[in-house]
Image 1 (cartoon, rainbow, N blue to C red):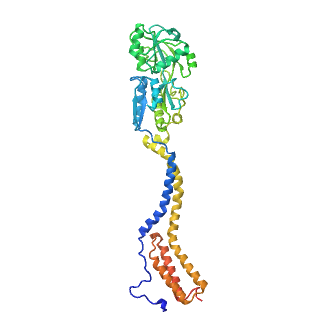
Image 2: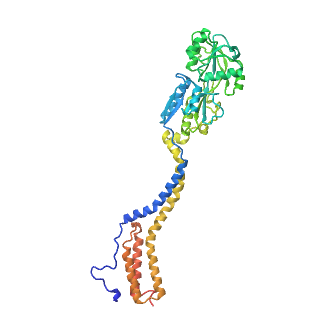
Image 3: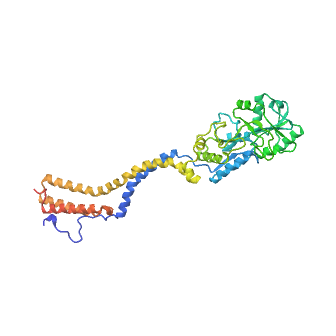
Length: 450
């Protein structure tokens, strides 16, 4: 035994061997080093994709309807129920009629409004059309037969309150016909009494054929007679938001025979308008509700004719067109509204993330294996470097003994190396190979000997 190879004294260590680190702690540290950068890349991708995630549907919506008991008030209740069933609070705003509804919508005081066709302008930058719902004929009633607007020249005419759709349509009609009249705007009861007493010559109202208002007018004591409008087809072709219609005898109340004869008149459409920017999911919900309640055959409408994109004063929104032509998407058929809306929003986030995460998860396991095996294989590099140095220098026995002691230090340092149990076999193989090389160096065997 050489001096360099003398045995260790009691209590003496070859080197200060560091305390081995817990394998679980080492594993957690490796996992953190591996997954932290991947999580950071994923987070950055999520933040980038979030730019394309739309807003959530509103929790509350205001709908402008019309006078209590009118057709628009009834329609508003139907839409409000559909919204509430979907978890959206709906506030119904009663108004004097379509003109006021349109003003509220323009000012942004309501989100959706029922508006009589012909009142909005072609260019309404803040508004979007949703659907037209049904036809609302113009009813002209008097105690004596009237056939045309010209017969009312200079007479007092009950044409609805300011802000009502009837008043707006009557003014357009009389202006187009070049007829001046004395406009009156009493409520229905006052208007009927005014015509019956002779103070006014006629009463004009826009209302759906089977509405409570029309029944009230036809059944009123004093015998108000609905009259046909002369040149109704010509009027409809001049004012293109109108449609020439015929209310057939008995179609309102067959048992009572009302009306007693066919009535030729014109009719605008009841339309649903919204502020631009209304959430597409809410638009789809409103269009779906319109399809449920307004698609059946009526006095003037054929089966499936409404709801429609026709007779809208402003262009329909893309969401309304898609909802009407394609119906609810799979998401909204398969899931409750709020869940479907959430998935619909997040799809623009999920798809890019999946595209990003798939390759990241593909490279993560090989990268982890490389990190663990690198911790073992770097020792082979140190051993090979030592062997190469000794071989090139044609080492003496003393140099070989010193190299063997250096390998002893390597062995001590290996106790501080921690790897997961699944890689323990490679660590023990390294220690076995280290022992073989150390023994060859001590015995002077191998390719290093001179």
